[in-house]
Length: 108
Image (cartoon, rainbow, N blue to C red; front, side):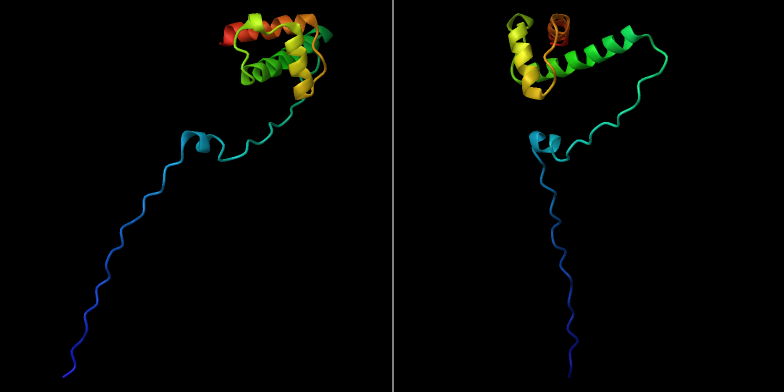
């Protein structure tokens, strides 16, 4: 007499995805470069100069904050110009250096 074998599928426990640390999740994807847009036409020349000066000051302030300079008193012109050389921008003027210190002061 033949007996039918009854087979049951045992449910395998589902594996929970492992959590990534916060550091890993921040750098999981590489950031895409921002699309460059043309500046609006018809502005006075001084507007473009100020705009580009602000962008440069922002880049320098971020570079200094990333390197551990958190207080404007420690960001002298020499240190700001060294940071500019390190990130590959032209040395900033005294006016731009003042803007960098102001950004560090109000951004921290």
